[in-house]
Image (cartoon, rainbow, N blue to C red; front, side, top):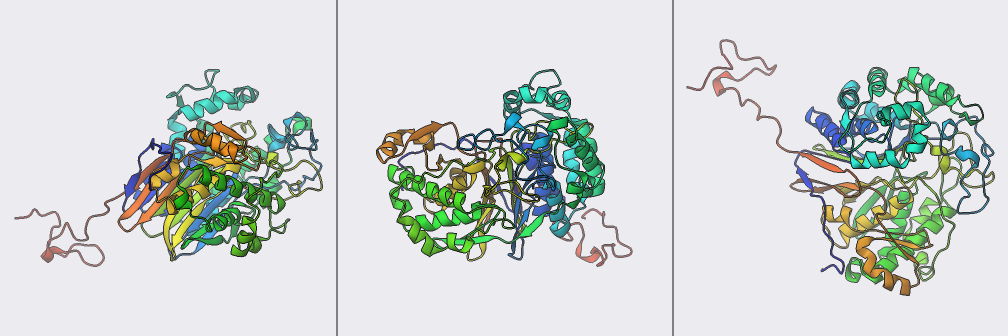
Length: 569
């Protein structure tokens, strides 16, 4: 049907018959594609891409961060590798001094100790999670996966507008750390677009990781260097120790599965809130004719806003680390509960605002054998704790800003505890066959944006490129954020009872893969440096270099007395 609000896609999709890699940086996509071309699978490609992104997107992701990888194996099994960061063993509910007991700054602490510096760092999980994935399901030797990252760090890469802007935004904090300033601002200023950045110390760290794997950080020399750096600063010292690093383990989890108009919706379980609440929201919307309402109509946007606000109300009431909090997954994802929710949609939900960093990265990968990886990983805030471990190039996370600094609350600090995340590495299937895989950065705006993309694909019959680039809407129950193409609908939304704010973008760069009979489609959106790379073609037909009377034996050797290089008469 005709869209009330037409929009123009800024990027173009890629096609591939035997492989597809989509990441939020061209060199990340190139690294993953290199692994597929070398005979690796989607797991190899995703890990290699993520390692390379730790070089070219140092503001977004690093080996000392955390995240989730959702994998669909070629035999149809789904799993989620939970590599989220957790609180150190010596931390407790009163580790920080909060500056306020009430929103909006109830998560802030004295001297920003949960945001900047050693005291903001939680026990990281990214490298351990990536190495565990490769150990279980990869094909290529692990050093091969690290090589593109080493090459990029040592030979240098060109600064994008995205990176340059991020350094500029946080240059005051970055200047205070000599290592950050030396590497990220070698001329004493933020890098200009197109200037080459080198990370020689980090290249050496990656070489050690290529030899030792996760043990380099979780028990080895890199871990010792990280722990030593975090122990400095006197009253601003951190809590993460070598023992914390040595004892960290990623967790292999099952998935949340729901249905929407004949499609299966598969996402991550708690501590991720995305799988639960995307299924919940789609269950609610299933009773409405979203296609008939039309994309971008006031009626559709009003319904989306009320549905998202209700999901946030339930998220605040029941979400968290399942080792610490009882999350009623079955109730929240049931069709019966969705029916109850629809009776509440006529009211604006006014749950207290929740906080979560919006800075992270995402990759989506598929191979010819049916393996799929959709993975979201981060160091939390831009440039994490905004310090760099000397002689390693490692930028640690600032995950502790996601914990409530007050004792006795659902998100209060406890040793080993993970906090809820909005990361939404999603896969949509039909009759068990993959149809779409997608994800994006963006903190609390992630899972509502992923839900909208699924509605775009299923209800509005958008192409993959349209679905990821389409304008978005978001709210927690207070004012409703809309992207600029929706601005003409602001007056109608206000008349429906919403406060409205037009914003430059909602969430970050979504990237996705579509699965069709004739191959794979990859799409990335304008909100990041996203790039899709597809692979077609393949190896030569077996025996193409040999004549029928000169075919090689089964072991590959030519028949005695023949010359495989003989020219055709």
